[in-house]
Length: 538
Image 1: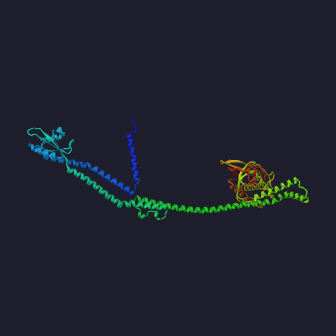
Image 2: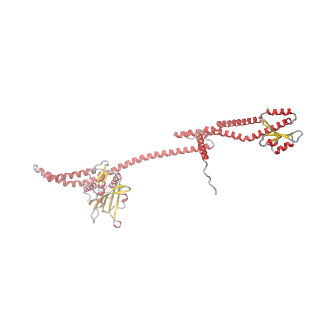
Image 3: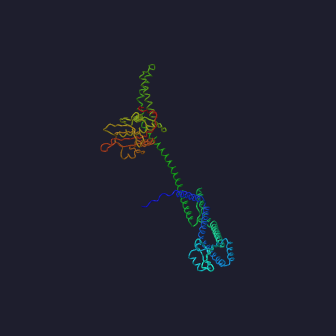
């Protein structure tokens, strides 16, 4: 079963943790340098590294040459002094030993092969050939020489080992190292000088400078040829490819910018035209509303005279009685009657003026039941309309925030349309029903006000375009074709929706039409204003 390797020793993890920040620091150092400094640092570093590697590579060969020179010097010197050492004259032997002591680079030892540690093979060869010098390169002797000196009159003798170093060889090696170092530094200097004068300025520094100048022109949005690097200055290498790619990108950017500016200019022109058309449309909508209001006012004017006849007759009779006998006191009942008649005339006049008056929208909390009664009263003033029975089912406490005058105009249009639609019906009692309640749609509170009749319903041909101007089917002396379009615009100004549909009966035959007003029920609250109080009729 193979054992999994355990965690690295703590010392190893510490070494790795120390090395990583050093590498990161080296990368950050190079990243923070300019191109010229970075290249100078890199080719200096690599040149010195090459010099070091070359010197290390030459060292074994040079050491072998030095060892060979020392071995040769040892053999030659031992061969020269060997006759003196083998001489029977003590004076000659002493003179040779004095000579050797004076040479610090020469070491000699004498003794048996076992004492001197001479290899057996070399010792046998030397003993067989006395007076012959052999090279000795076995440990502990390196670059040495050995010879056997026999004793006179005996078969025994001694071995002499001599180790000599060659100062000339070592001096030559030092000079070789120095010459090699100087030669490499000289070559590096020439290479660096050639790079800095002839190669890098034209191939690296100048292209980079031109790219930076062109980028500065782009940042300043000069929009001319200075944003591009001229083709004559683009080299045929990787930097040249980068420069051409950059030129293409800048050209594409400028084309897109020009297209965007043209699109923005066209959009601004279109926005201006749309603003003018919206203004004209709003003006036309206001004119339509005013025209519909005036048309409705004109149709109701005919009923005003008949509505005023009875109150005026009561006041006339009372005034005549007073004129006949000024001293006679007025009965309290007669005075109260006259006051009620005058108040009735004031209410009719105010209702008519409020309907005809054009003023900016003023949204307030309004009682819906009062609005319905006021609109019904205004429609009844139009004697050209046969007003059917109207049932107001709107809860007395239900209010909403709206412009009372404009909402009254909407209800007048809807009630009048319902009355006109039922004018030609027969066989059943005509009736208009108006009710309202609160509802929730899409997480928001709404007020739903519905005006329904039991007439013939809306023609399917006109239902899709019912709220378009002049979509009325009765463009005669009483139909303007603007009422529903104006009503829908008023409801839309209030943020609401006006819907129309037929009330389905048996066999899908309509039992009447229903218009629904949906108004957003905001958080506003306050007293009911505009003279329409919830639960009261004007």
